Length: 398
Ligand code: AMP
Image (cartoon, rainbow, N blue to C red):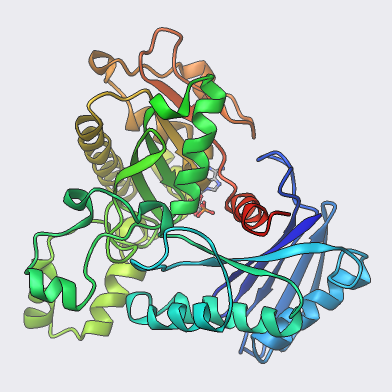
């Protein structure tokens, strides 16, 4: 039995066909990407059993894209008419205060997700497009929404709330929601399994370092703090986002540079971070520039590491004792130097990375600290699609 997992963006739809019983590192049965929706130059890429095929066509909207993608899957024997799907799992970015668990989608849930659009104006409308189209095409299947914020829904108030005027905060639902929750939860559940520990007695820091990046403090399976906030702009330095900056910078830019709200939004979300400092946001390109001793690349990297260490230090104190620190996502799983530099010179705190273990390449979850490191350091590949399929299976009792 398979779950069709859909991650619908404003101009793209990613999808996977996933067996929830598979291992985190298994390839899905099929995966695909519908790109450039609404542009003349659209494309659909489908990968089945490692074989990639690509079709270029104009894709007017999400309905056209998803229908064509299903036809391509059907033509290869893995589409909705041949395979028995037990559910469709949808990634939804913002669940606000309302959703701390996955839910079965009906008309009421759709309108609740719609009500959350002001909190995620770029993401929730696109997620909803995917939900509406998929429900229309596959009306007989249960559709499950899995929220990126859900894992952080029950953080302690001291971590979840800002020191901002109470009335304004409650009127406008201003609080720290956190994002990448499905990934932080998935990774934090893998860690006790890898270490053979009781999850109820494990305190850990999870570092999701991809193009977007966030840190979380997890105490006995529950999120205690996270670096992203009302929006995914806060916290760590990211590919194109600033991470934490003095909010006064925004007023300064508005007053002195006469920038509009939209211009500042674009500057901080899309033209900043590693890209804003070094001109590239991919860490492989950044590493090449560092090897050529490019000073902008060095500065970007040093700011990135400094901010990362700042959060690791804060979460060590918040947790009081740390059993494990894990790295995940594109940078965290692949960049040996980032892992080494993030935790360098912390032997006094019981953190010691083994350089040989750290340098080994593998797609399996693994420990990269020395045997005598009291804090275990791990690399745990994330798999949000598998996590969504597993949650859909639990909810639909498949
Ligand atoms: P994600 O958002 O998790 O898909 O991560 C994407 C990012 O991971 C890319 O922008 C790169 O910066 C980084 N990345 C991917 N592969 C590698 C690699 N082999 N070495 C270093 N960074 C990588």
